[in-house]
Amino acid sequence: MTVLFSRPSVTVSVENTTLLVEGDVEVSLAADLAACGVKWLKHTELTSLSLDFSRIEKASSAAISVLFEWLRICRQRGIHIQAILFSAPLRRLASLAELDALIDQPAATLAI
Image (cartoon, rainbow, N blue to C red; front, side, top):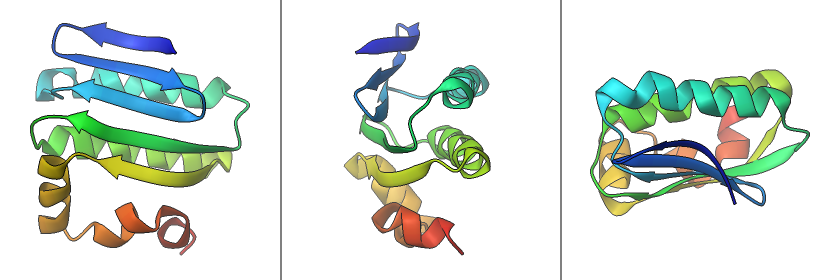
């Protein structure tokens, strides 16, 4: 595991082919989280990966914003998204935003 970003409340790391967020994504840290992931995504040689938000304990629109920024870079670089994993609280928030198709079938949804 490689840690890309670490603060007392949140960590971003890479584990095999997964970009992983753990903790609570606070609005004040969202830009830094997104930036560290973008930097890594721009330099990775991976062509396929998963985005794991399943270890986020609190639902946060900031976490979804980070996800969208990472998806944008993946699309630009042609990186295939195998899976997007969300914690239950974050999944409920994403459902309210009608993002179920994106979470359940990222490759099909992003191909549109």
